[in-house]
Length: 107
Image (cartoon, rainbow, N blue to C red; front, top):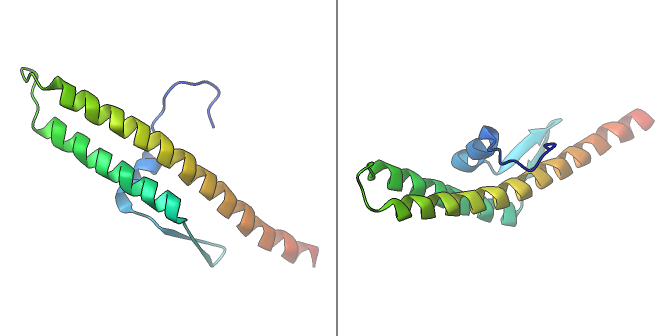
């Protein structure tokens, strides 16, 4: 999706995780996300919650900086795994939805 290897965190991926989206309607047809995508979304949601908790109880004088670092690292890994699976599945859904339109046009 991006021309370089810099980290970028797309808010729509976070929204999909937090909102726990499990289905989409495209051209009036329902498409459901797979089990693996949903499990990775739950893992990311848990990591996001842990980071929020770590940040809410931490201040600049706190010696437990390692907790925040660990939570950030866990979120980073969970985010990358979920984003890869989620975007891959969205691409597959788009291809299936497009096939319906292409078949209709060909008739």
